[in-house]
Each structure stands twice: as C-alpha cells, then as structure tokens.
Length: 456
Ligand SMILES: Cc1cc2nc3c(=O)[nH]c(=O)nc-3n(C[C@H](O)[C@H](O)[C@H](O)COP(=O)(O)OP(=O)(O)OC[C@H]3O[C@@H](n4cnc5c(N)ncnc54)[C@H](O)[C@@H]3O)c2cc1C
Image (cartoon, rainbow, N blue to C red; front, top):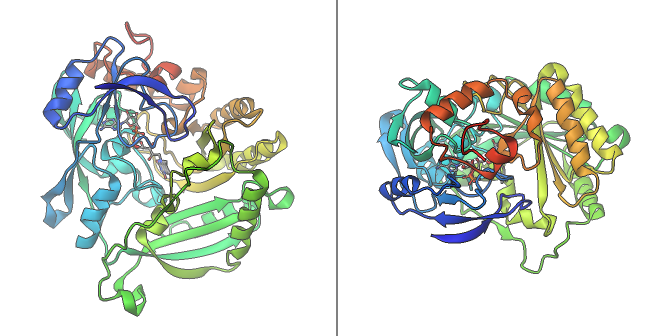
C-alpha cells in the first residue's frame, strides 16, 4: 500500500489516499476489513470525471489487478467478468464470438465495477436502458463480507449498488447478459442540422428507427447557429451491409488505434479560436442530407478513445464536464443553457446531446426520460462556477438532475431535489454499511450518506 495523489478524469480536485491493489478477491475482502477510520472506496479505471473514486486521507482499493473474463453460460450469452476487467476487454472476448454488451459508455476504458457503480448509459438508452439492466448477478464485497446479489433475490441492495458510486461495497464480479451481432461494424447514418432546434427535431424524428442515436454540437457557434451539430444514428451491421473485403471475417475487431497527446503539450487549455476552427471544419464536412456509411464498432461507440490522454488537452488546471438530463417537456432548458453559457463567456468546447428513455429502479441512477446534454469546459474559465450553479437551479427546477459520476462541483442542497429517492438509497446503504466504512470525497462533498456517526 502506498500513499498516492488521485484525481478523476477532469483532474480538478486531486487528493491523496493509501492505495492498495489486491491481487485476488480474498485480498480485496481483507483490505476492506482493514479499512482505516477515514474509510475506504473502490477505484476502477479513474474515468469518472470528478471525485467519486477518491478518499482523501483514507484508503482506496484499486481493482486494477482483479481481472478475468469467461462464459457463465455461452448458449444464452451470459458472460462473467471480474470487477476490474475493462469493458474493452469484455468486448475483445465477446465480439469475435458474435456477441456484444448491450450497453457501453463513450469509452472502452471503464471497468465492470465502475460501469455498475455509475449505472452507465450509452447512445442507445431509449432502446436498451442502462448498464445495470443487463446485470444478472453481482458478487459484492461489503463490510460484512462477500455476498451474491441479484435483482430478484435482493432488489434493494442490487439497485442501491447500481449507480451507488461504490458506497454499498466493491463489485468483485458481475454476470452480464450479452446480445448477438453478425459483425464488428455499425451501419451509421449521419446528417448535419443548422441549430439546436434542428438537431432536436432530427433526434425526435429518428426516435424508434435506430438502436443508437447521438448528436455532437458545436458549442462555440453563435446566433441562429447556436447548438448546430451532426446527428448520427447507428445499428449493428449485418454481413450483407459490409464492404466485400470485410465479409470474410465480419467479426474481426481491428487493432485499437490511437494517438497520444504529446508529452510537451502546454499546461494551458487549447486556444478557443483553434477549437472553433476545428468545429467549423467538422460541421462543414458533415453531409446536409442523411448519408450512410459502415464504421468499425469501436470507432462509432468510442470516438474519444482515438486520442490517449485527451484530458490533458485542457491544460494543467483540468476540465469540468457538466451533464444534466431534463424531462422532454422541459427541452427548452437545453437551448437556454447553451445560450446562457455563451452569454457569460463560458461556451463549451465539446457538447453532446442524447435522448434518454425509461429510468431503471436505481435511486441514484442518473438516466430518466428526457434530453441529456454533456458539455466540457476548461476548469480555469472565469465565471464557470457561478454559471453552473445557476444551471443546477434551472435543471432542478425543471425536474431534472446532474450526473453524479461526472460531478466535481455541485452544492449539496440540490441533491435531494434531483434525486428524490435519496432517503430510500440511504436506508439501504446504512443497512449494508452500518459502521460507515464506505466513503469517498464525493460522498463527503455532497453529504450523500446523510448525517450518520463517523460519516465526516
Ligand atoms: C471519455 C469518456 C466517456 C464517457 N462516456 C460516458 C457515457 O457515454 N455514459 C456514461 O454513463 N458514462 C460515461 N462516462 C463516465 C464513466 O463511464 C463512468 O464514470 C464510470 O463509472 C467510470 O468507470 P471507472 O472504472 O473508470 O470507475 P472510477 O472512475 O474509477 O470510479 C467511478 C465510481 O465507481 C466506483 N467503482 C469503481 N470500481 C468499482 C467496483 N469494482 N465496485 C464498486 N464500485 C466501484 C468508484 O468508487 C466510483 O464511485 C465517460 C467517461 C469518459 C472519460
């Protein structure tokens, strides 16, 4: 065990903790049992943007050495994966055999435990729901020992763990339901839309026609072009959709190609005019009528993985990703947010809009039916903190919520408004961790655990 400085993907609030990397489930259970007074939290691949996988002055259990993937039941597509296995590795196991995980987030560099703890969603939430909906069973290391948890046998603990940000225990293993695919490619339809209303209308019109749907927005566009963007829809390609050269080996995953941000990258964020020029280029190269192409699965699902360490492009001070969801009836909040951000001189450098579908039973799970907007800003931007506080109020007032796995700065007052089932979650959390062993920087900052003895 060594004391290490840890930060989330946004690199905004590093703190140090004693980090242990247990090589086995038994060692992970022993580490949990030896938690210090300041508590313990699990850490997967550190892709949550804020402080969810940090525990200042306490212990952090890294699942990096808890790997291993195999069939639980091949005929029905049930795959068993260790909590520390990456979703990229799970796909590397499944895809060549004609299977895929039904739900993945926008990067392959997420652990199975982190995907459960964030109850992550993909570009297909309206069709397939979120990650926990495809989890058949978990092996959870709790302060009281290891237990098998299924949505049928212990729905309260299962759903408190889905989206529970590691605060009900450490996922040692998960059994996941995979779905059949014919190829390792996606048939993608793309078109551009000249403003936020056009983008939302295009996503509405595509509803129910495709499995995946997402829009990239040019957050720096202004005036009538505010929120212009490229809308993409995708479906798993059949063999007949593939170019002739790829039909012989339709399930072959190409090598995961990426370039790295160079070591000499300056400590300041990318200059706004350079990002504006790249956005202009990207938008103008987009087709203005629906155009179909066939793309490798990973390029479509994980476009940001093409650049290793892209979080360093925002400079030494790091960056904030702000993601909210508002009900469809409050869709105007999307345009109002973009407008407000631009008006106060905080236009996002990256912005992504999606539709979300039916919520699952997780009290802290983020998705609910509505529009979700994710926007990235350099953390050093003047005025950012106060405009995001203002947007929190707008989102909460509209019946929406902020995504906790991406949060680094929200104030605790709005938590119970955004997550009305918080007390139900707290009751289950306390039952599994009566001694208050499981804690994180995020749980302390947001007062997530309520006022129990020792939760400070
Ligand atoms: C480029 C990029 C794109 C993304 N796209 C999406 C997206 O499209 N949709 C989406 O929903 N999210 C998305 N995310 C967020 C990401 O999927 C989640 O934050 C996820 O939880 C990160 O997993 P991790 O393994 O990195 O966990 P960490 O960041 O290490 O930890 C996150 C939380 O999970 C807990 N945790 C980790 N491992 C375990 C375990 N074994 N048992 C119990 N708890 C554990 C931690 O305690 C912490 O609370 C994206 C992130 C990035 C960087």
